[in-house]
Image (tube, rainbow, N blue to C red; front, side):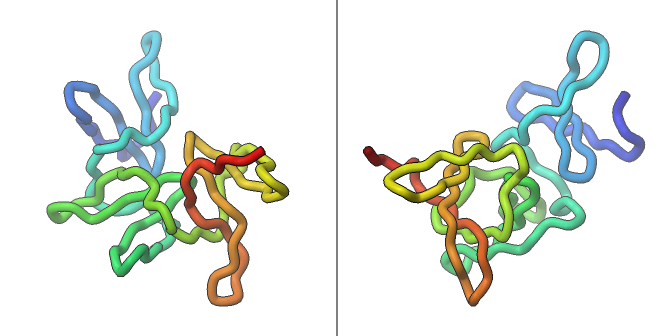
Length: 130
């Protein structure tokens, strides 16, 4: 059952449903939570999302998903390299590469970082190491 207040979202020919930062797809007569599809448009960033600036471009970040303003709405976009976030989703996996404990979530790598005296993570390319 979808939560009250959901909205329908089409990405290409694929139907999705969205509510407060969570995307759903039909599955076996019901619905299942799925990763946010790149290219989905929503009217407003999810409540509780954080504003992230990357090279003077604004994004919103919420539970591992980045949203960028496009045509008066917000689009789900690929994580921008260099983005600094305070936290990563709990489901992120630690990947040790050359002594650095990267976090990996949904194919995106986050390197521990400090910005303006605050600890967090910076989106990085997939690390190559020994």
